[in-house]
Length: 93
Image 1 (cartoon, rainbow, N blue to C red):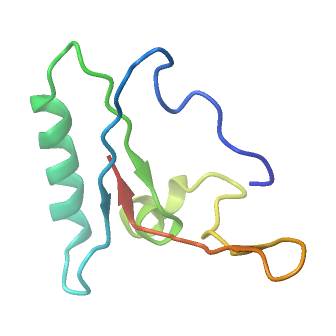
Image 2 (cartoon, rainbow, N blue to C red; image 1 turned 90 degrees about the vertical axis):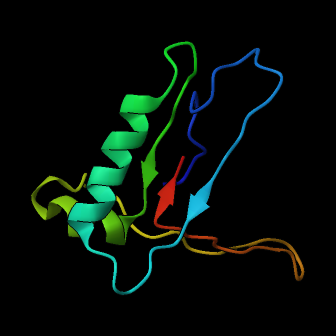
């Protein structure tokens, strides 16, 4: 992705709560998918819930449905020594 994603969070809200998860090596993809389904089914209807998957986890969950161009984050360099490090996680709520 060469530009930021627009419209991930609902504008006008005063607060956002983001949770980033890194899966354990022994985690079963099916158990992760079940946990995401359960969390979404229990979310309050008046709450905006966003779920984002990192490339590696998406590939393990549904390799045949990975969007074209989806890849792991890369660090971005700027002028001088400026750098925005890549902070790839497997799952974002």
